[in-house]
Length: 343
Ligand SMILES: Nc1nc2c(ncn2[C@@H]2O[C@H](COP(=O)(O)OP(=O)(O)OP(=O)(O)O)[C@@H](O)[C@H]2O)c(=O)[nH]1
Ligand SMILES: [Mg+2]
Image (cartoon, rainbow, N blue to C red):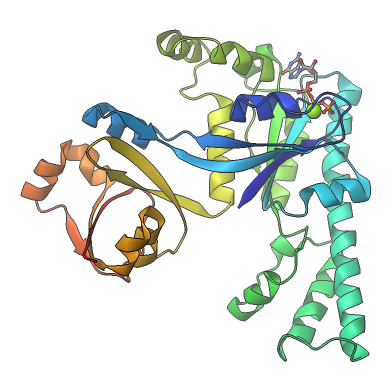
């Protein structure tokens, strides 16, 4: 599961990439993407860590790419393996800069639909000429459904695919099924004023196409980064916000990938583990250790919300808040889990 940062030239992509990963990123004008790993801030992990005061705290992490090319085949190649795109919009710029950013969204969407249409048509052609064998008898109707949407420039993420069609979707590396987050990079004075250049259009695009909009300010975030924790809180308070924009962008990307976290607390570490929505307890245990999956007996589970109401695992036990779940339990976001296993 991978996220990429993209957007029009000079919008602040590499600045955001560096803020999220700590990796310097690509030099301006370079056409090579950089890759890094970003931590996904999570208030719940921070609170657990504070309560237990253990040696180590581990947040969820996801891969991030800084895409340097803005259009054409090179752009498509750069984003092919990404599941979610964060589009940085240069709203701190003058009017033409803002317009470039808005045009970028339309251009990207058009390129995605055209590329998907071309691969759908070529696959249909090969199937009809018997040059390829369909995966199953549903493939042709599925491709025709895709073609019909793409002909109207409707991205595939907007099609309500049926469960059997979703399996087929994963066989193709479609572009227009990627999730998109819009990240307007706004000037410092607009952080407090509650509006910024292009806001109306961006909100409308977000609403119409189902993109989450998460503004941030590159220059302000760079300042925040240089502060210690105490001054950071104070600084954020002056802007009336509790979290830096970069934290909200990381969380939005995590969510857009369909990922959730469960937590473990052991003798020396509080840790967040990443699973896909819908993962069952036995498989989730395997994330921690293959022995835990192999020898899975039960999972002791308490939700973070229940835990935070009483403040300790012992208290949860006394109040009967800890549930004993079997291998098919679907793990929820925020579950604190202890695996009982035997190998
Ligand atoms: N005023 C202002 N300048 C910014 C902001 N964010 C980035 N910049 C400046 O804009 C320039 C480009 O920033 P980058 O982060 O390199 O932008 P980019 O989108 O990666 O640029 P290219 O990869 O060259 O297309 C740099 O000089 C940054 O210092 C911001 O929020 N406000
Ligand atoms: Mg760059």
